[in-house]
Image (cartoon, rainbow, N blue to C red):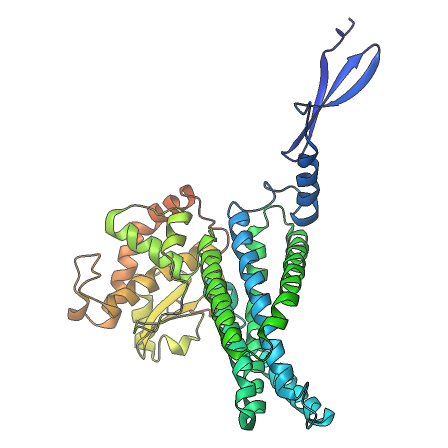
Length: 432
């Protein structure tokens, strides 16, 4: 049977933007772009721009929050580039550029001291806080940018305090080294979140292209600014504060736009508290909107995950109390004002989530036992171990419905961003 002339035999598409169809015409197979008759050249320019600066397969290959985050990240990078130009000019002036009395050796020593202290700061910060950067990526991302602005402000002021110039620029160098570690590491964590096709490398490469384009634009604007601000400290500070306000605002909007579907301690606490209050499960979008993005200094009961056994129990009697009503591969205890969780080697991701849910509930009871009541018990009238036992009874009743609810709401429970330490313990439930 012959195929009618002009009938579409097959169709194909490139991502979600371009569609083609194959038509038999006069015995030949003709390939034709679908629905683009009279297409303007502007569309081809937009297509080229997307292929150069956006990941392959956009938007299906990235998370839904990708475009909004990248927009605000671009704005902050542009303003940071301009602020950096002002800071660099001040640093060069401080080391003696344009000053006939300055020596090359003196300038070199100052520069080496600044770089050296920055290297040490980078190593120490990565050692002390490296494991926190995944679980609290938003907070550390914003912290890094605030610290970067402080460092640049110090560099701008440094030439006006020549006696302390080296100390100031070295301190600013340490701050910038911390910014480099925190900013780079949290950007990697956000790239993992944005990648929907295991395309972290492509997203990272295109992010680099976007940043390079922004820095190029910043360079062109800086060429106009430099003659205006030279020997004009008032204008320099005014522009710096303007760019800093834009930088901080855009960074805040950027981290606020991120919607992570994996649990960290803050997000699981927000979702659990809402569920215990009215049995409603918050979606990832709702919980991320409530998640704090600044470090909070108010007094709360801290939670330590993956601790040693002796941080939970310190006697056989306490071990019995920790195991009472508990057949799960984790032990919960309260020590020195902290809620400590000891994890068994065989614990699954769901066990980890339940352990943190119980720890969050106990922490809330200890921090504010009256205003945050979610059950009929009154923690002040019970010992710490009774509170731990009550957390087991509460989660025995509520955790499975809670887990099914969060999965249905779109949360990823196959992995977490909880800050577990590496201690794993095996214990005997019965004594022979």
